[in-house]
Amino acid sequence: MKLSILIPTYNQDCTQLVHDLLEQLPQDAEIIVADDGSTVATIREQNNVISQLPQCRYWQAKMNLGRAKIRNLLAEMAQGEWILFIDSDAQVQSKDFIASYLKETEGRQVICGGTGNYDSCPSEDKALRYKYEIHAERRRTLKARRRKPYAQFSTFNFMILRELFLQIRFCNEICDYGHEDSLFGLALKDRKIPVLHIDNKLIHTGLEPTPAYLRKIKTSLFTLSRLDEKIQRRFTISALALFIKKCHLQGIVVWLFKLSSRQLKQNLYGKNPSLFLFKLYKLGFFCKIME
Image (cartoon, rainbow, N blue to C red; front, side, top):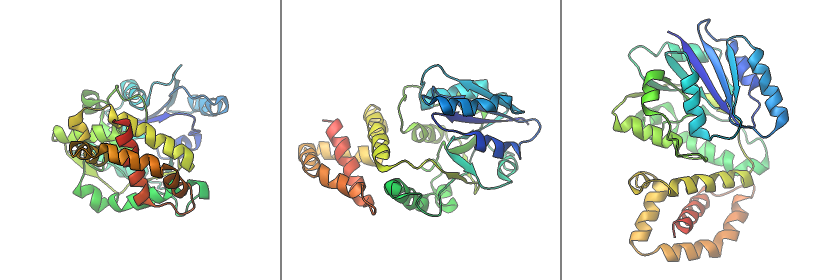
């Protein structure tokens, strides 16, 4: 059995991640890193070193293709029977990371390893993202993931049979940030393909400062707004917004959002942001773009 580890990257130095993986990489395995049109020249130069490492390939896109297309291309490049997708802002914490995946492959098709976080917030300007991730750990425990295997599917760290992946693929229509993992999880559920969740976490190091994080959230909500209504009804924010619209309350919600937007941002930019107010902000913003 051959394994291909696939790492899409954009403006992220992933050389340390590759070196850590190489230390435990089987002889018949490969690592492919695909740069999705990074705009920072120094990072491109740093990652270019990967092309000189054993069992590694490094490919650069001439322009940004988007999170879905770059992952689909990586799967097409892969030579392994199994493909292991890892985001470039991941950190290996176990010397048995790869072996822990490989020992679970018998009779399996999809395996998810999980996501871990820093023990403390890296800096005050990243308080919102860190607080959200720590709160999300409650539904990312192994027990919670196994209870809802499709809802907790994540592209951050998962392994899948290459043949199966190429039958499903990520939705190429999603060029911007957001929901490609959720849609893939729904596709697995609709096809009744079992997903095994194991305790094989990678640390998520890519915590953004609050302004950048809110921009990503807005982008993901725009992405969600362009999806079919049947799909929107399967996500909490959009399902609630559709219910509000059905009750003819959308105008009131948007008015309240515009009225309180400044105060909401003041809280979210603070040292101790409220996740409840964060939910209200996302709901208000989504109702606004759906007017």
